[in-house]
Amino acid sequence: MAIFNLPKGCKVDKNIPKEIIYRNAEADEKFKRIFIDNVEKIRYEYALTYGNSNIEKYIKDDERYDEIHFIRIILKEKGKEKIVSKLLHQLIPKGTVFVLEFKDEISISTAIKKIGNNRITIDEIYNSDWLDKNSEKLEDFNYSKLNSTNMKLLYESIVEKIRIINLSKDCINIKKESIDILETLNKEIEELKLLRKKETQTNRVVEIQSKLLKKIKERDKILKGE
Image (cartoon, rainbow, N blue to C red; front, side, top):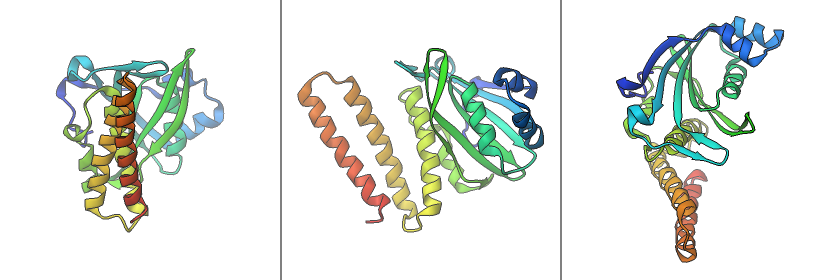
């Protein structure tokens, strides 16, 4: 978890027995076999809260970002990591970042989820490509580079970094400097969305919406390689 450089005060550092996962998930034999064959260890590394970070909670309707959990999953084999991470995301009603490790490689997994009627609904899961533990791309996950306006924006900034990493691999026309611009644009877009939600005056909403659409258009041009 050194890549996140999180505050020492949010360190948990304890093992999660796999049996707990089986019991809480009511997992069938097929999933248990996948877990047994592919997962070596699960370690609960950090819990980021308002108390240890001063980052504001975000709780609204069916969105709940009062804590962000960072959990390391050490794998025996690669190939089933998306199945493993999906089930674990479905179990935890909090913003959760899984760092899956296999030898000298890691993959980071996040999920946008909704909480309602004691049920977790996954909108989408974002898994990064496998990266060398010493990859320069991982420097962008440093805590100091994340959007700390509130817990939701911080979590979403991790999601965006995963998307940018995957994008930079698939889109050879996007240069490093363009990815930096994308990161800034994504941050500005999220901030404008937050402002739009809070604003009550119609003329200000129109003004913010105009700025938001302009930023989205700028981002789309870069994504298209224009």
